[in-house]
Length: 305
Length: 273
Image 1 (spheres, each protein chain N blue to C red):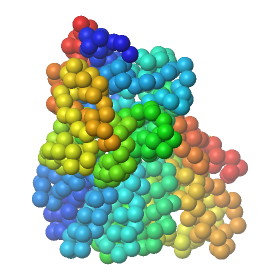
Image 2: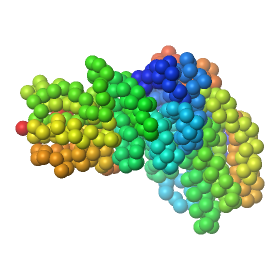
Image 3: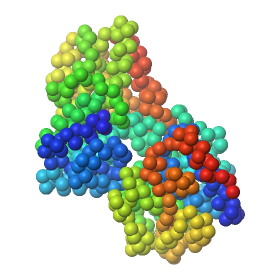
Image 4: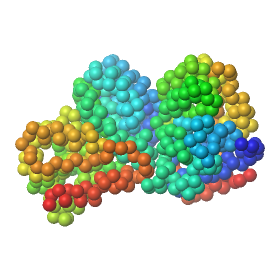
């Protein structure tokens, strides 16, 4: 998804968008498809995230469309008050692109993981929060964010995520269907967990369990009405996220279903309320935490039976 | 603590070999940043830091913080040699489910005082520890090793001002100034020079040395604290990837891990003296 974002930045620049790309000294090689053709629109602000965010605010105040890039913890946690006070509160059109959502930086450890970012981002008034599920969604998310008249946060995984959509989504703000079943077991996936959920759904199909899978890239503003419509026939609703079970997609879903007519079962699958103290690849860590494809399939099968 | 200069130089070669081996076996990067600080770490652990592996939580121990946590392998190797990290644990570096990851995770039994990996935290925490020692009338020293790219972080300079204001003369910062950061040369991204003058202007005692010269490193450590009533900093001019010709001064080796041919070639260059 990183490469899709960088490619889209180059396309937007060619289309005449007055964007300026800032990185906090991260993105070796991956940023070259933008940096090389547009050196005057590219600034490496150094390992100085707080300054980068507030500089972006200043650039936006002169009419530029800044995009700030780093790993989620450094971009969002480290520079948090700069994000809150200088970008979000004045509703400036700055796009924050964070890579490494969830456990994407596996072996690098908890300093590089981000399991609380969606919860925090959702609580910021006026911040659009986008978690694309594949490269196609990533492009659509950036294009949507760049035409907003306010701030946005785009949370990505690592790279090399599979393409899961045949064509560009019509509206990135809505749940996007990946697989349609009978509408009785409806699964919503957050961001890069879409590939894992799709894998789980395929295995469930082989076992005779039909599920509907939706990507839910826009967690704020949350598509409350769409979600309620998609779950009218449902007996089981499941959310899957590589994020703490506190405050992320599952919480947003509960808030949306509360007060609706939905009376079936609801389960949120996510990470426990603890920091990771072990080490492994993202896939290994997902299995460690019981959110790998096989774990998800087993949970859903049990719920559906 | 009585290692001769020749011993230290030999140990630096052994440590570099181990860094290459660990990176190769675990397929992890950051070799360049690791090789540049080997001599400094060897001197600190063999000639400076007062530690006792038999009682790792000894309240009077010197505190060392590896603020440039991405260069964890020579740090783990040094801790293993001092008897903190068991050899079998070190051998499982980067193994799934293991305890030693690609950035240090706090584990006082292993001599790891702070989880690091996000730059620009170590000097502030180190200043807090040194301040706590001073308030309690204790004499242990606190040492913080930072990278050059880390000097971009504003928090480093907030800590520098705090440490000077509170006259934390038992605080020693070491900057591994290998002139390269993640995306390129420091002087092209955020020019830090004259780095020694910047610390001097902030009120620190400063020594600028060749960070690969064991005599210069040991001499600087002996001279600590450099000025009464002031924190001290060693600005160590180093070479990224030091010790392996094809890794020296190469940004690629911030990321790459060696293939079998490069692995053999690197070890061939690091022959024990």
